[in-house]
Image 1: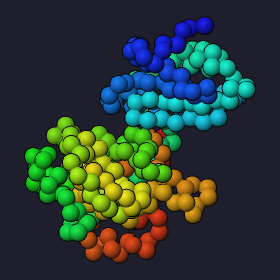
Image 2 (image 1 turned 45 degrees about the vertical axis):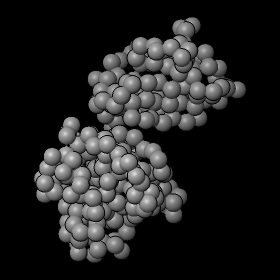
Image 3 (image 1 turned 60 degrees about the horizontal axis):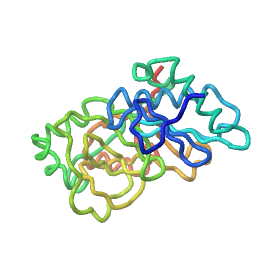
Length: 253
């Protein structure tokens, strides 16, 4: 059996880290990069496809994949060996994105009260507000991972000049559907909550839909989101349009 490096050692990538008695984290990068994120998404999809008996759950983060297993059915040594064997089969950083991803084109307003910190964020990025909106909406952004709140996707990555630090102070409240930005990423807020990121827009898209028993989480890691600018009045008209908030969805082969 191959030895798993202790968590205190900095092993080469990809790196395996046991988490408790029933979990393994497979790390493909120590910082976010496109290859590391692709590897995490592809490796998680491969584990799901393999459907190993005893694996209870999988998840992915920005640059890692996680699997939880039933220690009564699989030992840590068995899971570690299987993970090593799967890792050795491919160059995971060169893998394509998972099949059957979706692209969401979501209407968003970047006007007035819907975008209280757009001017500030644009200035920090070296742009005027119109240029900032054009760049944010220019292309689809990948759902790199879900986190912080149920269904909330970290979308990226934006160009380097969008590597904006978080605010020193929290904004006490941004509403569900708010578009915020920091660290070259965009988030459509899944619930009303405080944030250290700057609000630059607003949607009527609901990322978390607890009333939908079959699909409470709208976005999945690997999905794409492209924001489509609309006026404040157009956005207000979408308030009663349903949980997609006027979004158009297509499946990517």
